[in-house]
Length: 208
Image (tube, rainbow, N blue to C red):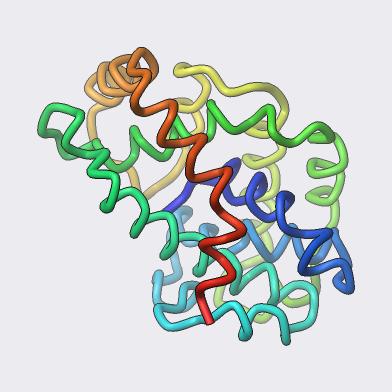
């Protein structure tokens, strides 16, 4: 499962090639919406799909195309991470998954040049967001957290600050910082993250 910046970066990478018929604002809002569940009140199974295909994504309207792309990114990324055996490069910890996700966000942030537009999309809402069992206050809070998180290149401290606002995280922020520092200084991790970014279009096209 990828974190929000990585989701936007990958959606942005393939938007013009595969999804130029979609409304970009709705598509991007859809891409980041599924993880609103981290604020509580909604189950993962209500916003994520295990068997979604590239074809399923392309045939949807703008919001739900982004929404389903989210699940596809999560699946492709997890398969890549396991194949590269990235988790073996870190000491055993209950926070390895979170640490890898947040380091990906830090490394890939610069791949999007216009974060202002992305943040501006989150000043508004897609009507589809209100079709889920999430109240308006939670949706507004999620948009607000993302606008703050997208505002500048993430460092270890502000990625951890973002994570600390989510109800789903109940671990040790100190241990997470230790892992992220280890990841940040590991050239193998950096190369694997950028390799995934470079190969994402090829991996996406295989998901039919």
